[in-house]
Length: 379
Image (cartoon, rainbow, N blue to C red):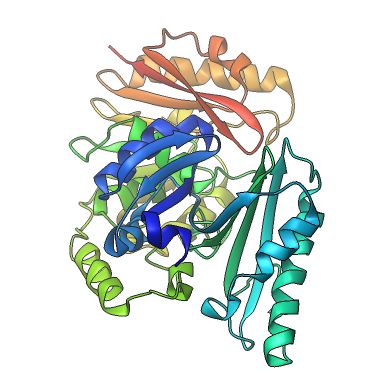
């Protein structure tokens, strides 16, 4: 038996800034024994819950099933222990695989070399038993394997997601530095928006926030466009349980009312990309989009404004940006009374340029940026 089978224990990789939200989401999806840890959350789950978490989580990037854990101070130890696994339980010679390694605070100090060592052990064990070997595909393998070594303790896991879950499948095109889907989902969740009032993004860019808002309201599972999941390669995979879980979640999908979600952007290209991305989702044609400078917009009273304004990485001159943020503050103050705004600042220095008093600020890291999500009550 493998470790996950003995313990029903799994590990969700979740960004540090959204771990608290992630723990709550895992609980809602039926996970138990939830325990946040370095770089993610340990939890326990039966088969149905494991499949449900993979299909419906909006915040986790990967769900790992640990196969074996062991003390590991050298690549020799790693190779020997890895060769003891019956890899034919997970991979056949016709399928491809890849190993993704992460090493810290250990005698083995090179992630790439550690991954190569595990890969060699897998290939050699196949060659010895069958005379053939499965191929490596580092980009789109059938089977994704994870090697994690921290403080000389190694865990080899199968990635039950089969690649990062932030790739939802609706993003057909993007502008420079688009917001990651898991971060956008976290922002929608922090806003506690439930569709009782309209939602508007005045600087919608590629439309990621709009798409995540739609999926949230319509209860569209985040993995609805995924062709395969890694859990299908577990030796105890149960197709009938997966079919039941999928049907149950798909039945909960509901329609998006007209005019509930809208977005605009100064850039015609951004609006066109947003339109393509939104329309690749069910009910996405009901999101109202227009080419518009928010400074000329009527605004939104008694609603929710969620936006990710441009910052250094995406835009040029600082003076222009400072002016933009000041204009955004004026727009919110004058044209959005009775609304609540949630603004994501990729660079914190611009918070003071808005000229509004914040209700709260939450750290939210994305793509190497230490950003802040700030809530404003607009009276």
